Length: 348
Image (cartoon, rainbow, N blue to C red; front, side, top):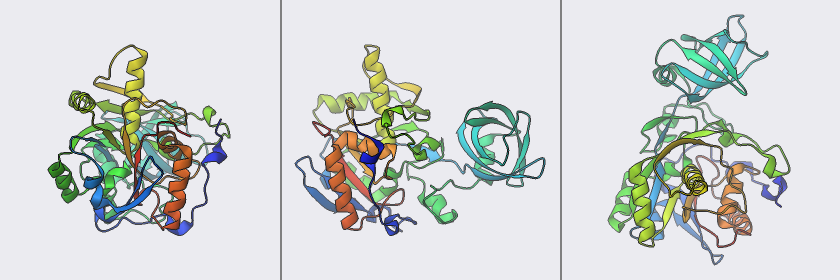
């Protein structure tokens, strides 16, 4: 059994990327080969690392400007982070305040509009908006950059912390593996015969939630909403039938597909189009059903995402890859560099 300390490593702080590169595909790409080899690339070289008729699956979620400073009716200040939009006028939110807030409390956000707490849904609050909440959020909110990025978001972040294929508003964090793609890279992939498809998973705050128990089996993930469209199911079936690889662009694409496939298998069904929620937590020992390769960034020590990639490529190969990346001064986390992994036959 693996414990939390098995997923710890020492990262020099200067390797935490604080800003996105001016050119998306100028980032680096570490290819982890199942035979143990580690190949250093530029991300623009991705097309030569994949095969014709392979399928890349992107997450088309769009990041909301979900962070607000607020003021209570008493004058006390609060910090609000929208977790999930639940209707045109309601959203779940985290609220950091000096005292616990009660149902019926009113908060003024961004010194621009009021919301009221309609109920408590621990650990969140349900907020009621007087107008369309996505419009108000994106007009008055701040981009919720990860806590390890130390500057306040600016117009450059508003552009670069979104993928170029972001279409469906609802996330509070970017699917960061997708941030490396630009139009020339997509054209090169298409020219090579690589196919592309999309799903949606709205990333919530659980992506940054620390694991607080040494026995990782006791960790509970936050639930996230996802949608797998019929066309994607058809693309996956065709890819599998041709003996080619399904490549998840990011851990969110992987979690959505693996959750849907696992649930379908439990019900004796094949993968099908679905809108659902998932709190799937993938750790070493998990049996992967759909994904053959994974494109992902470098993740935080002791994080659920580091556990996921270790489950996929093997604990020891990931340790070697991270040691290599640190020694070669790769850039880490959301604005950092990428890895291309292949599913291990035995995750050890």
